[in-house]
Length: 295
Image (cartoon, rainbow, N blue to C red; front, side, top):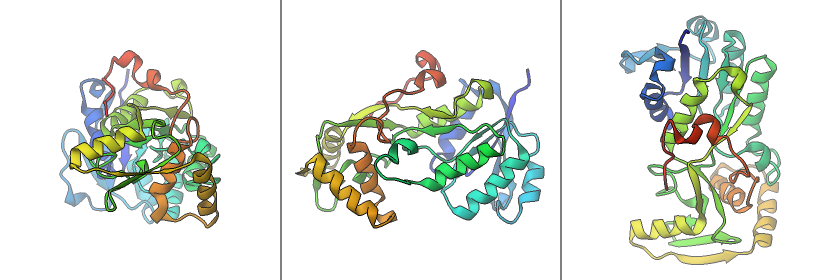
């Protein structure tokens, strides 16, 4: 049986290293053809090895050359920030390469659920996936709740209501409300697991989580690790929802992104960050491939 060939767009971003480490790990390495192809604007800045071959490519102005380089690739993994021109270029590239599976840059909220709270939330990502599906390519969107590793949910904590500057924590509704989190390493392993499976076994949407954590637990961990006492502020669920609606009506504001995430996580199950069901067993049956990380 031939091994799966992989190309990665954005190997040097947040999920790049965890994804590469997962692909190389003993749980998955025998399923993949190495080296994987990593597209970068300037391959001379990086050193290729037995696991990664860096290829120079410009998604927007060098489509034809990239399509040629990527000919025959089975799986394309996209780890890039959403930008309209970039996404449009990648859609055209993927449509021509026709991989068996495309894993786009989702990795966060379940966008269909988030739209119940914030209509049109990150619509650019939803449309991106749908555009590739229309080209006849199998697309698997991965939703993993909030990242929890390194800075995420330990230093970057605004999405949990913690304001390090004012030393406060503001809860929208109950502090005990829980939401899904995933370590970066676990997301990398999820990507590797999906890439290792036949397209016929994969759903269009894969919800995963390392576990669940409450807002109160995040605040307590922050207090302990930073030797600080946070002043608690409480906003009722109804008041928080009304305020969120007013804020969203003013249009998307990137400076309020962590606020949007807190609202979604505070909204409860199936509103974007907390899942009533997930596909953990599909990607890691009985934790036979790895143990999910604990917060």
